[in-house]
Length: 287
Image (tube, rainbow, N blue to C red):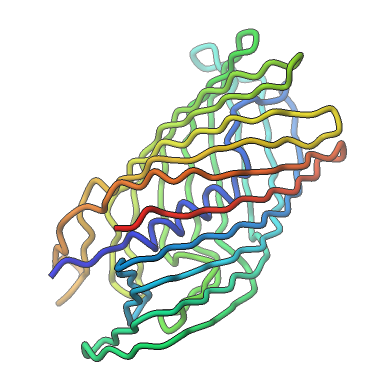
């Protein structure tokens, strides 16, 4: 039997989009910068999709709402490598709340299925993110290469459908490009990356590696607000596995996830004092 991990993968994308706000690669001159952001994100999934949550599996319509406050420190150095500036960034111990509600069929570890509704919520610390990057700029064109590590510091429980962390480390390697015209306020961004996931020690489950492409088109206004539309293309390129009978024996669940191509409307307010408010709605494709 093949297990599907689309909702957990979608939650990974939700978290990444939430904490990143905008993945615009426009970077400041060499300096240290501190940014505080409040992120409101809603994700929905419906249909006959099956989503594993720890010890049980949900199927049906599921809705998740995130509210997260995140502090990000970035440092762009004077060091040049291949003509690009070396930089570092960290989003440590974001704090927020997440609410999951569903009209679903719940299948337990013994295979018993019960239909009904489920609502759970949690608040606390989310996963932390650290990154190293190389960035280049020429006129209105900006591009970079980024290696991002996720540290599993977030609230997680195998018995809960609501959580703020994925309880597994991961490494993401990404290349990104942004065109930004400061005269008109038009911003066009795109990024292509691969995420390498490690095992969740609470469930002995390892999600396969994920190929993803994100894009954003935004208009920046003099008031500090910006509005636009974005989305991503997601595909899990390797099968997920569960560890059984010791450390080295991995049972392959096989298969890859369906490709997702959702479009995400977004609104952001950038304050002069390095504050941000980000609003997004996320709806993964049915699988």
